[in-house]
Image (cartoon, rainbow, N blue to C red):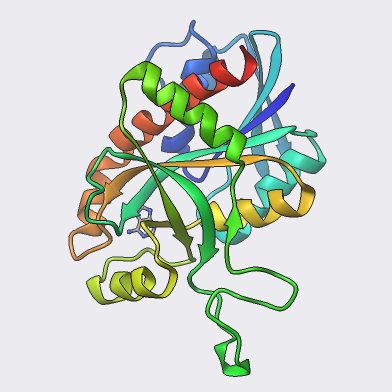
Length: 247
Ligand code: ADE
């Protein structure tokens, strides 16, 4: 099987690459990973690097897209078209909307929407364009596997709607608007773009996020503070998911 693992930022994928090559030291930076790995091959396509590993008899391709919907769509397309990924797992951090979600909590997207997509001037609902859909659903099978992984590891795993947009949200009013308009539980900047691409190619996908902030006035401070630790929480779960998928 060929399994793609995508993040948006380098911090989101470093712990994944370390998880794929046990010979690497746990705190390695991407530069150190590239310099020291004997098992991960690097390929540049469309100005971005893709990291190919063989893991327990399967091919795993890892990348960080860079932030935002356009880069995320490009990377998801390359992973599917060039690397022929059979499924795609996304790992990273998100801002919490649902008050039950706290820093470090894991949330799996049941469905995703684009909160910044707006042609309401033509009578369409927010998040909709003709021939598209407001919500794109993730793979139910992968979500079921995730629940099994969470149970085995004794971890709490939330499910909810994730809203995506090309904006870092650090404003309680904007967050409230996204909550009310899309009934969203968390927000970030790539998930729905990946969802649209995978849905179009009929490739099963799974979007996991660990909370880094509450999309409020403190969001940029919290994001900087918790990006690494929350990325690691998400990455560790994704590696466990990978083991479950290929077992
Ligand atoms: N990812 C993590 N926190 C975020 C926020 N507050 N806004 C957008 N994307 C995020």
